[in-house]
Length: 274
Image 1: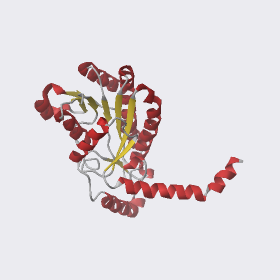
Image 2 (image 1 turned 60 degrees about the horizontal axis):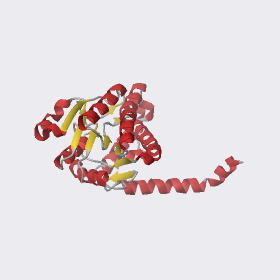
Image 3 (image 1 turned 180 degrees about the horizontal axis):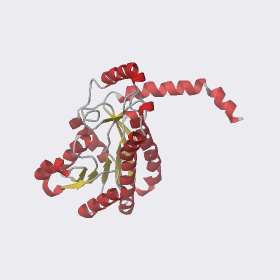
Image 4 (image 1 turned 45 degrees about the vertical axis):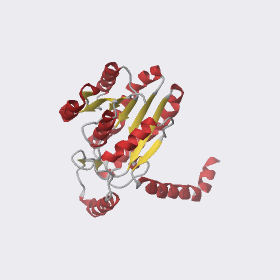
């Protein structure tokens, strides 16, 4: 199998780091971005010139374009672009400040958009490429406390599904990876929180207990590396792929409920038609 050149955002920890290591271990080359590239020093020491560390804040559109261009010039081509950079924000919808919501969207949505836009002309010219968008089970369903996060991931899902249709004729593939709970620091040091309103204290406790139950059997980020390699090596990769055992059941329950409700209220839909 031919060597692939990767561009991975948010490679300092979690999925991004594990996937970078997996790619490097099998002989691929990786441009790995992080806000602090010192977090990649050990990988540079181990893998040498196969790893190109790039300092990047994905909310900076000009910097995104420059980083993608630098990686392309360094390696000669880009085969796989992974939009992994992101974080979780916790807060009831009423508690979200403008800055809370804007920061969440700037990183999780706009960062992925800018990197994607930067890579597309290069992939179109070479007639191939695979863009992996790290979404979430929270990209297709929603739970209390993380409304801003859900909003960012639902939007990521929407533009990526559109994108997949727009670029198929250029030989470019798009895959949305939708993990369930994994043992990353998504809800730990990387997370941010809104100022809490006491009116929600009782409900907040209940919501946090429910979230703890959903994430009790968290997946292993190291194990996810084998799954991502399967995706990038597939001749016809899927538009969407869950990571972890829990998401399929959550999705089935949610979508069955949606279909049931839509059918129940179809007479209202037809009334609106005129």
